[in-house]
Amino acid sequence: MSLAAKKECASLEQVFSYQERKLQELVPRLYANSPFYRRKLDQAGIDPRSVKTWTDLSRLPFTTKEELRIGYPLGLMAVPEEQIVRIHSSSGTTGKPIVVPYTAGDVATWAEMMARCMAMTGVTNRDRVQVTPGYGLWTAGIGFQAGVERLGAMAIPTGPGNTEKQMEMMCDLKTTVLCSTSSYALLIAEEIHKRGLLNQIKLRLGIIGSERWGEKMRARIEELLGIETFDIYGLTEIYGPGTSIDCPLHYGLHYWYEHLLFEIIDPVSGRQLPPGQEGELVVTTLTKEGMPLLRYRTRDITSIIPEMCPCGSPYPMHERILGRTDDMIKIKGVNIYPGQIEHVLKITRGAGSEYQIIVTRKQGKDSILVKVECLEGAPIEHVAGQLRKNIKTRIGILTETEAVPPGTLPRSEKKSKRVFDYRNL
Image (cartoon, rainbow, N blue to C red; front, side, top):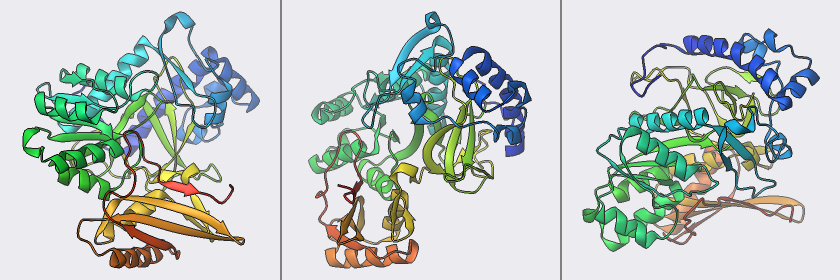
């Protein structure tokens, strides 16, 4: 499909039917071309030609991040090396990095998905798009730039950091679209507000990704910069940013179903869950060539939205990411995700967007402290009390709470660390 997507699918049933046809092509291709998946399917006793429906898909084994690390550097490559034109890599901060090889076809598909994302938000070839995420082995910077150029807009590839230069370019070049992490968008927004530069910038949109962020932070960025923001999702292991984005109605994130098959599973049992139920997102890459993935466990918590969007797009939606299964905190028998805390901040009057969750163990008992910044002029003790009450009402757990003045918690040019679990230190 081109950028002007055809309205071919009016329901999730039609989307799933289309994906089943693509699945019947994918699994035999994987078996023929990927030694990794040939072994995996043989060990599971799966005949690749027997996989024809969504029900059949549930019989297939998952692919995990640990397996991708074991395959380092190019153990999951599914084409001859001479067809690989580029590699990207995860940061490797929690273990061996994951190296992802791309064919020319993969690069073109990714650029197309990124351009769709831009077009979905209303970016046109008249826009000037400042790209602040990192370049190099990381996928974000070059992914955004490829989408901007594919759409025909002007890319301003500033890359990360050097906030002084970022603001100078923003003012002098009259940037209209900002691409960044939410943490860095907030830092830039606060600096522009502090210096009274709002009347010197021409920003109208922000395309924000690379970390989960809540409605409170979205509202703060939009207020300080006078823009509309859009949540973009993606993973290095899949392509990079651009696998989904929300439209101007902000009902959910549209994903590109002809390239990506999304399932939601129970993260404990692995059982498939129907649309509308919350669980772990599992992705199958239907058209990827260099390193296709079959039932890849993302660890991200979301749900498939059962209805198609009133905006008229033929692309289905998933909810914003609530958190990750490996970010989950279990305390006093209750599972807590950062996204739940962000939902509580949204309804707590006087609470800002910046927070930390600090978990400790004293004399065999677990305790949790939620530290939050107040908005300017909000009574600190009152905010702390309301936050404690709302967490108890909405999540069902008693916590310690601490409210601090605005600007107290650290800002980041990359991603902000929210959860500090000291129980096993």
